[in-house]
Amino acid sequence: MTTNKKTLVIIAGAAGEIGTEYCKKLIRVKDTDVIGVIRNKKVVNVVAKNFTSVQCHLDNTTSIERSFENVPVESYKRVIFLHTIGEDKFNHRNYPNIQKLSTIDAEVYDTNVNSFKYILRYLVNRVESANENGINVSLKTAILGGVADKYAPFVIEDFCEAKLILRGYIRSYIDIFPDWFSGISINITSTITDSALAVRPHANTKDWLTPEEVVKNSVAELLSSRPEYKEIDIIKFSKNFVKGYYENHKSLYEKWSFETGIVSPAVEM
Picture 1 (cartoon, rainbow, N blue to C red):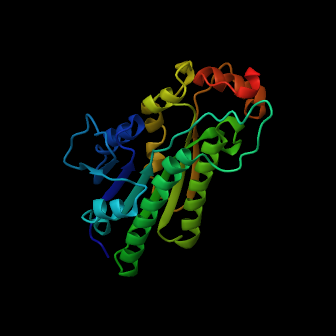
Picture 2: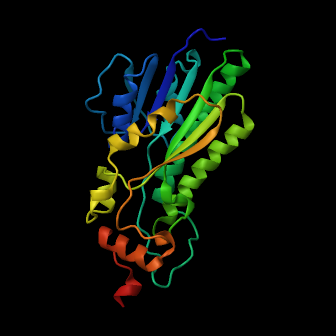
Picture 3: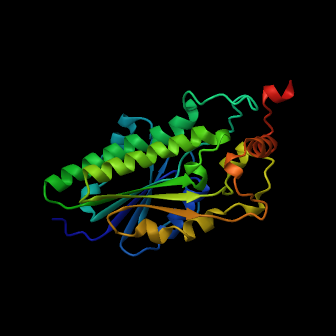
């Protein structure tokens, strides 16, 4: 049994706006060490004795093993893996003659699923081995999903399907390791980040969440030690929201086409 009562939080996507905000918040939590996982960009304005960054290609198992081989995962009482990565794309699907989704966009799958599943498997294997040797470590996994995922609106169905795959991984591991594995999906509405604005440069962000709001409204559940799977929704309501919007193909297309500047060839004809 480990005598260390501390928590280790591993944040994938720590250099992004939301990931950085989580770092800033969590380094102030007592008995908590934070590791920010980065690829190229550095985590800015986060300096503390209990914070370090690890450069890693999360879609590469060898990179993960090399980057984390000296991280003493087994010495912590709790490990929390927070995944804040994932690109979405507007997919017009030849609107108005909407084509069925035959497969998930490769870039959406890679940034959402591959960047999650390989490190999750690695951490599960490390914790499972520790627990088999009587060390007693718990592992909690958290993802950032979308409030709209359950509706899978056709314009971002690739993204929603990818996030549903992540939820499936979490539930599967809870079924396999109910004594020490738990998970949470933090579901958010549109949030002001550079990556979101790059996809939707013409969007009106008045009703979008800020990274600070996402963190403030989720950190307590993230740190909760309840052995369960949970979903929480963080929503900033818009006065312009209309019931049934997620099933209204015309409204969805018009909004996303305007915000992204991408027009379906079938509309241009």
